Image 1 (cartoon, rainbow, N blue to C red):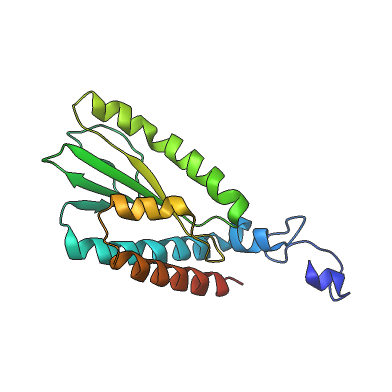
Image 2 (cartoon, rainbow, N blue to C red; image 1 turned 90 degrees about the vertical axis):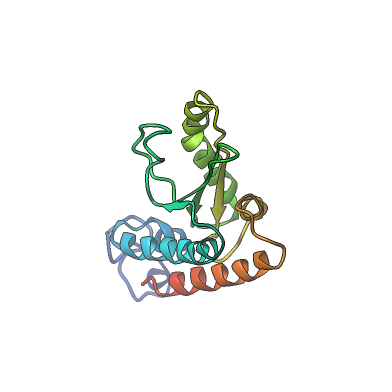
Amino acid sequence: ANLFKWGLATAARCMRCGANSETGLHVLNGCTTRMPSYTKRHNAVLDVLRKYLLKRSRCVSFDRPLRGELCENTLRPDIVLYDDGARKATIVDVKCPYNNRMLYETNKRNVSKYSCFGRLLRKKDWSAPVFTFTCSSSGLIPDYSLVALKQLGFSRVDIPKILREVVKVCIMASSRIS
C-alpha cells in the first residue's frame, strides 16, 4: 500500500497473495501466503509459556485433545493444565491478533469455542475454566491474559518475566514477517 502511495507500485494490492489492500493488518495477520510466519509467532509465544509451565507442573498438555476419559473431542487447546485432585482441567488457548480492537473479540470467540468442554466435563464432575492468553502482533497484552497466567498458577515474580519474554518473542516474530 505504501509503495502505491509513493508511486513505486501500480496497485495497492498485496504483492504476495494479490489481496486488494496490503495494510499492516493484512501483512501481520491476514495474508494467506504468510501463514507459516503467523504460526511461528504463535508457537514462539506458546514456547515461552511451555518453558515456564514445565518448570512447575508435570500434568500439562500442549496442542492435544483433552484426555480421552474426560471427553471425546477433536478440538486441541494450546494448553491444558490438569489437576486430578481438584477434578479441574484449566484450558488456555494462545492468540496473536492484530491490535487492541480485536483483542477482546478474539477472547470472546475463543472462550465460546472451548465452552463445550465445560459442559462435557461437568457431567463427569470436573470443571474446565477456559482462558485466552493473547499477545497482539505488535506486543500488546490485555488484562485477561494476566488472569490466564494467574489461573495457570504463576506467581507475581514469574508473571512480569513471562510477559517481558512473550512481548519480546512476539515482536521479534512479527518483525520477521515480510
